[in-house]
Amino acid sequence: MTKREKIIVGVMCLTIVYGAYELLGTRGIKKSTPSAAPQTNPADETRKFATEMTQKLVAERVGSEAQHAVNQASSPWTKDPFLQSAALIESKPSEQPTGPKQVAAAKEPAPAFTFTGFLQIGDTRLAIINGLEYAVGDMIGTSGNYLESISPDGVVISSPNGEKIQLTLSEID
Image (cartoon, rainbow, N blue to C red; front, side, top):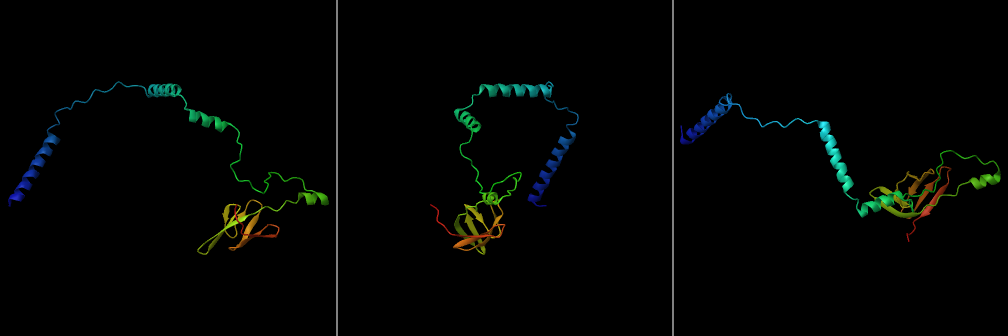
């Protein structure tokens, strides 16, 4: 056996002896355990925590920025943040007009559309109408109008009653 092999076998024997000592030698000796803390009721701890947190929240003053945000949230809005639709949405249909003058008055005006942009990505063409992107076949608004065709110079919009609206590209101010 070479010197190197003798060292490896010696270290292995020492490891086995130490493992046997740890495993078998400490059975008779009881290890001292730390003294157990007195048992407390978890409900009492929870109540104590809730009381402390409530006291801290009451003691802490609300900052001026937070107070301003609370005041602004409760005040009425001066401007509606949502887009306005040209189509009216009613939960119940109103009474149908019967006379010729009432029929003419009941006819809704054509919705105003503005074609302001054209995008082509590969074979996909998109039109920007009233600030939103639409592809061919997409419904525009809630009135049933849909985009029939798109070209770089204009678009054709079809309505549910078969009318076609042609729009040309317009510049935005």
